[in-house]
Image (cartoon, rainbow, N blue to C red; front, side, top):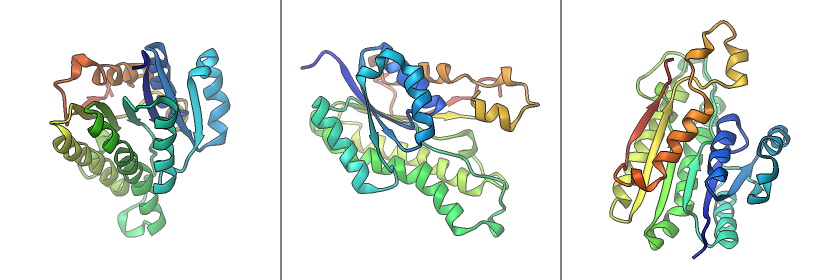
Length: 236
């Protein structure tokens, strides 16, 4: 048995994903990070620094089943195991009333926020069930708790992540696999600051704070937590 642990971190090159990768790397993890947005990679590599030696970037479209399956196969071939799957990839598109929403806008939110989580979970679950060990973290959102005007697609997708998390947790609770979700509100990222320059940014939760919550949920201390969606709102 290898001494290190292994993780797949989707959305790992984004702001929150990078913070989670930094946390995992500082705790002796080796990572597979699916990459999709080329403009994020340079900044990611700069932020990770000399720990990139423990990171393998894998160009992947997380909405395509065959590419996700290849991602899981790559992790198993490289590490022999997948200890953690952190489904951090996602995105926001809002402002349109449902009556005015284009079908491709609806499908984009479903694919990016919900389908990708389903595909990634499915790709590793058989391995985790056979091994009788695994930790899965998904990302829901505060907006997924109730319907919000102008955010029907995003809210529906994030509510779906929460229900999917609960369903999988029930399916694998006797397999020593923990499946939980975090539920952010507004995260203090450069993109959000640019979009909302007049808000009180001190109230927003920092990416490294969320990373610490993820770290706890994948730890043995949290082995009794399964099927939970943990609010990580800060004071927003």
